[in-house]
Image (cartoon, rainbow, N blue to C red; front, side, top):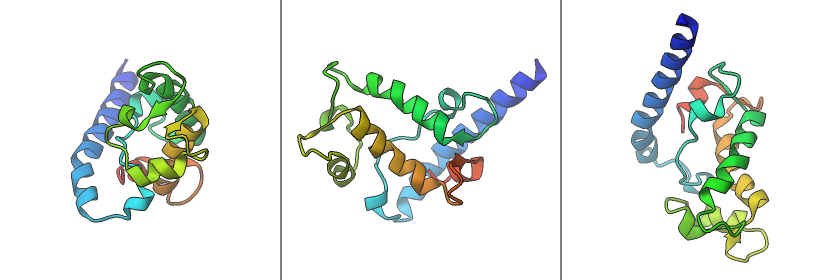
Length: 134
């Protein structure tokens, strides 16, 4: 039981750190072309093996389910108004067929921009220090 509480406490600490750091990170003037403007994924919902890290596989699995949550009108596409905080240029770049909406593959490509930006050592795993950069 204490291991479970400890893992939850670690995840809570990471989530709070991310939430606290986000305005500071945005204020630093990071390259907006590299940012989607979308909020961080929930570490608790994404970290399937509870190791405190987010693998590319875990991240992609979460994106699959998140697509359905974001598709408000259930038309199998996500329009820009269904992602109110998205960076418009990142959205347009992800819209590869220029139909002003994202299919599941385009949405996943959009969200993977954040993963790639954060994965400093390019090992396809986000560690707490990399997640903190969100």
